[in-house]
Length: 438
Image (cartoon, rainbow, N blue to C red):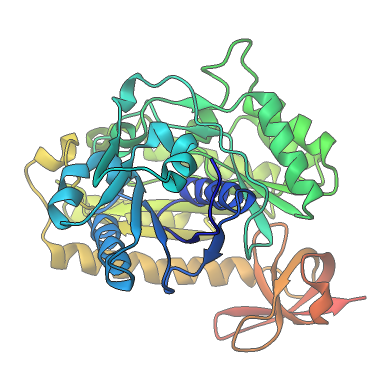
């Protein structure tokens, strides 16, 4: 099937997994002769890779569909991703023009559907995602406009946290075979990427569904040896998945970065049980303390979900106090959002919006305090920084240290996409500045 130089615009909402998948769409579209244009431009085809993790994400997905139709009422509209999977009927009610909905199990066929010359007004490529047992293999040649690449090694989730729609939208945990992961890393290396983020919905379950299952640790060992000039990061791991041998591997491997993101969600034991999270606040604290004991300069990030049903003031303060007392480097704070089909949506004691908003503000202030406390440890130290670009208000080079400190420094534009030595100099306006060490 051959493209007739069609102009295609792609927009991506939500997680790093979606970003990887959209990069695959774009790679395949370009290989078949399509011209990729910004989503704000008029195009022949618009692809919306949607998100449904929160009510706001669903609303944004609908907004992008409407925006595409306004840009070109004659365009072909293709909607994929979790919102398309979970709320296809809502999308059909929203619009009265031709649309193509591609479920998460058929993303590997999306480009075929998109470029088809013959199609009907309403197309729905869907299946029962809970029965899908193989991951969509979506090779990526490049990430447009990015210095670091995301590599999806796993999809789906078996955990069924009571607030989360993802198992219903993406199905059970499925892993990309080891040889395909290594091949994708090789492609990124050939394309000149210097950093790869291993991503998935539940990365810590990598390999559990494969025959002769490779472990995440085994995968990382092979990646680090195969691509010694590439830095690797792990997107997120659950508290019970930070084993000593994994931390030892990070500590001994110069190209596996000391940066770990470990979701907490709540620091109250009762709320964690209602969330169906299988650890206690004490377990989480021990995990963080173990990381710091073995990797003292590691960056540790955390997700926090505020305003879960039944979260009274005492439960919220338990979360705040736990985080205040731990050497967390930064927080991602989200208000709880009702999601259809989840157990939490039917729970009593839903928290009023203004209360959630106030609590989110409290923890986002704590996030700023945590970042500054972490950054303030490093003035005078030299770090290996992946230089990215000068697209900021200072017109300085910006890049990230091994332990994920964003630092601004003076350097020639040609340094972009290179790893260089930078001496952290000072903190100013909650930002980190340094000096390029030649």
